[in-house]
Length: 424
Image (cartoon, rainbow, N blue to C red):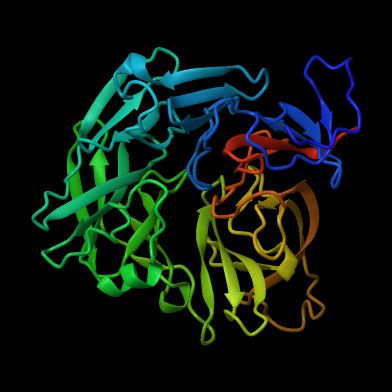
């Protein structure tokens, strides 16, 4: 492996590499100190082309100890304390094909209440859960599927707080073509042309699927592209979703009750070319966070914006262009944010938020006004060797001591974690 190795400490139980990892086809080290940041990085997965979940999908067990991830050979959990890896779904369950064939399982998320892992089968559109402790599996039901005649296709991607329902979308292709560019039918790893898919305006609905009976209910008919469906982590009946496509074309972030009532637009455009998206929940379910730029292009001012559902309070943390990230995330207690970097700055970032002081406090009623703030940023991992066609998808571990991400900085993708505290 082409690594610049400065020294090796044999006293450690695990080989500790000091140096900046270079892209290579060899297995990455299990642990190293990033020389540019002073933070410890560990590799959590062993198999090349392993992937952590999308940034807003829950991957953690209810006790916060285990992280679920996938690879070509199965679905795995890693103990974040011992780093022991256990295969949860694989050939022994009959859910994976033999050898090196592509996986047939679509990993949805981990249930916050039971710790059950929810997934669907690509071949027959069935939806399942598996208990990672006993390996007991249960078929929930089957989703409507595109039948070649232009009917409909459905997918689910989120589980509610009490694990009684899943939610997702159904698209009615309706004889208008579009199957090739529909995100539900895209091959794994295929990128969608957002403008082309948005311009189709295919009829869609939100759906829920009863975990006990498999019953599917449909609501919120629309010709906007409905996507990023996320149940609240605390309210079992509240769903957040987006109008997908080029961000400047859409009023992006919405909430709705899962009986179809209470449709609510979270953010309203304030200027031409304003864009916002990549929305996610706070752990307590009280705040919806989203990336905001005012406006796109023209030296846009970047923010991470938050909307508090109970009070309507709006928060906007200013970020510098170099701190721009594909995705952001928030710690369990809301005290820290992280970002995965991108074109302007190839780093995994840690952000310490601060509210701006109201210099006119008591002079006028500030209720209803946006509360501004700013970040102090800290670089955690040098991602200069990472190919950002793979999104790192950062998330905090529940104990807030680590930021988990995926990276191809060594060639194939692996799952990594970086310690929030600097190495001693």
